[in-house]
Image (cartoon, rainbow, N blue to C red; front, side, top):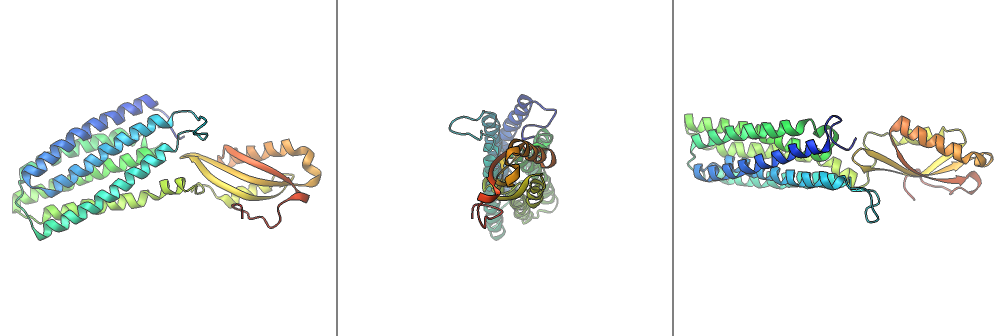
Length: 302
């Protein structure tokens, strides 16, 4: 589940990301040069956003490669979480860029400059084509990876920003409305910030060892306690080993007269966890009812 889309092999996904890196790199250079020559802050804002995309793509490309490495003595859980780290870096960079663009746009309102509309329109059109291409390349890959989803949202926001840049260039050509350029810049920045803040919570939750958001932990514990022979569950820890791999570490209290059935009870618990809740990694510590922890917390080790 944590790998590419079900019908796409890892190497095919890598090729798509590599194409997107080169396309965004060429576009960034063209937009920065065009923005300087035309005097358009909106074009430079779009270029900076595209540059962040290219950096994000490079980070994501490396993360995809590293994530495939098997577990070893130094990383006993494997390297899958590197994609979560990459997503966090990408969303954080979006927030920084968005705040910077708001500041620059506000300064342009105070001191508007002459803008070459045709350069803005032409480069905005080129950007729209490349942004749309990049979004299309990553769309089918983003459903199974928070890392690639961060990239897809980067590219989608770029495509929308490019449309805004083109509209701004047309308005400048037709009516010489200079304030529209910083207004579009701030609009792009606001959209970037909204995207980043709405998505960054997922990676943070995973890295903070939060419980999987799609699992009702009380329901899981109730299901384990309903297994024949189980008296109580406490000291439960739920977390995500990787983006799509939920894990459980807990203490299970067994009835005194069922201690001889320990192996069958353990098998029943693990089967229920995997089949009913998709938890395929569980560490269970068993206690006799007569020797259980007194006043043990349901969650954590308090």
